[in-house]
Length: 107
Image (cartoon, rainbow, N blue to C red; front, top):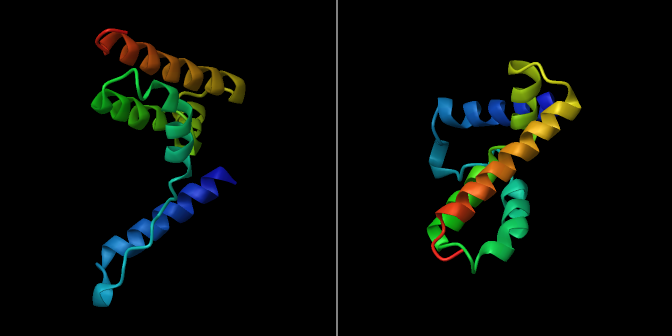
């Protein structure tokens, strides 16, 4: 099911970018912003602790280590089983969080 979602998103992206936008029609988003919204909500408690640019970078980086693309990469490219794939994604998110907190002044 998840691979089908990625395929549909990629096909929509290619269809929009192969021929350009006809007649100034607005681009249809290939993915929604749900993952980014969840990540922002989860990291909101750090908004007053981390400098804004570091908080933004952490938010963006965390979106890379979970979700369907991360799951497919850990399963297909790395050959992990689902449980280990989830553990690796959690570890990566934790490492990003720890690095950000270490980089923040006065934390």
